[in-house]
Amino acid sequence: MNRTPGSLLLAAASAAALCAAPDALAQYQQPPPPGYQPPPPGYQPPPPGYQPPPPGYQPPPQPPQQVAAARPAQPRLQIGAFTGWQVNGDVETIYGTLRVDDAQSFGVSLWTTVRAGTKVELLWIYSRADAEFDSFGYGYESTRPFGISSNYFQLGGVHSIRRGKIEPFAGGTLGAVWYAPENIQSLTGLTSYAPSDTWRFAITLGGGLNVFLTEKLAIRGYARMLVPMYFNGGSIYVGTGGSGLAVNAGVPAISGDFGAALVLAR
Image 1: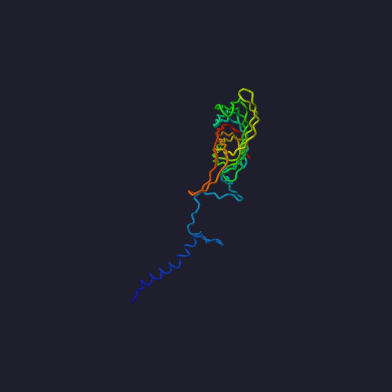
Image 2: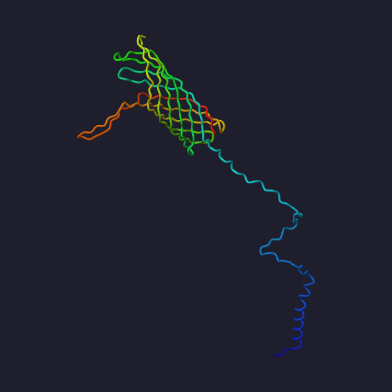
């Protein structure tokens, strides 16, 4: 390919300009200092006017994280001293009616927790009521009023649900009741009896509500049924028609006990 002197001169001038370009640019850009590291990818430079913190600057402490208040521990032991009013029922017999007046009751209740919501109860209830016997006219005479002391000794279980300061509960117990009647005189005053004490099997069923004034002090309202039972004997029979077991038992009367208690918890 033939080149003219003009084209050769133009090519030489272009090559000289390309060789001189880096030297011309270098005079406007300072070389990086020794140890310079290029910024990582995605680096955003600080906004204009940004002032870095002074040497030794410590960031302010962050407020501690709020911790939810723990629920108060449930008391494992509750001791209640109570008083109330016992509504007694009359006792019907084949010789007449034993009429028992209502009376004030006293007692102590001890609860111990076995697991959440379940407690074992030890219970004692005392009352002294006036009674009199109205005879049907044969076998026994009618009597003047006399006193009967009763002591219920019970062991059972209670289920409760604690909701803040309120704790409703329900439960039942079983054990014995001890009746101690005083001296009995006939209606005419001519005959006197010295009855012996009597023990009977008994159960109670009831419920109520604890209202906690503090974590260690509560007021309790309650209502319960007192159910004494008697067992006069039993028999076993065997015959051509089969065999069986018979027990002579019953409930002479059911009493209601209503009252309030002062409870210490720990």
